[in-house]
Length: 126
Image 1 (spheres, rainbow, N blue to C red):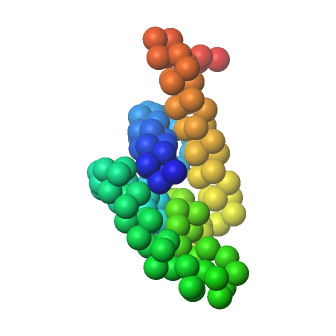
Image 2 (cartoon, helix red, strand yellow; image 1 turned 30 degrees about the vertical axis):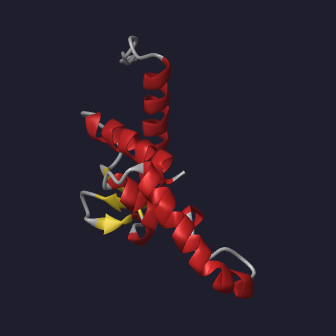
């Protein structure tokens, strides 16, 4: 899961960075989870699995007492930075947050299109 998130983040960031003129602010994407950070750093999947299994085993008593899992890739989150303002999206105005999320949605669409149509990459100008 962490590896897939890291791969997706890399593709989305490339899509956002690859646009020339855009009506939306430039966003810098990051992942906050420990396991995703390892994946983004290039740590092999097998190594992440070993580390995660060890962490989950060590956390069982705490997780049992809490009644939920406090350790694992589900604890990670997507962090977005408004590059022009050098501010986290959480600190931006609601209008800026909407513009950032629209940029992310369009990046997802573009990345999905490229995966499904690798030879047919063109944009309509109208």
